[in-house]
Length: 128
Image 1: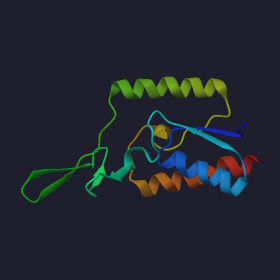
Image 2: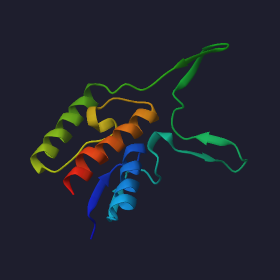
Image 3: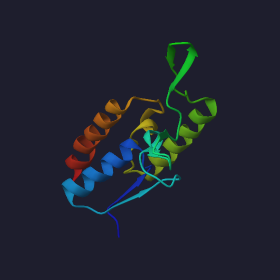
């Protein structure tokens, strides 16, 4: 039996799972559609020892020496899916959104971790 279910093993889900398990000594089940943790921040070394960023590195080179930041922006279909998830979660009650699902925007890792820690302090610790 688990005390918490976390859907999504990205940065936020991983931080929350670790905090709940280590600070509250609770059992946490984390599920994700991918076979790894870390979400889009996941990387690995290939057989040649080269570091591979499995998902887009969020930068592209427009011209020689001209690097531009390039984050994916959710489109209308994603916003509609979010609205459905939010409606379902509201009907379930006791359901918290964190990370990109909190407001369906892309963030750098530092703000994501800060938001996960804030959620832990304000919503999980305060209700135990």
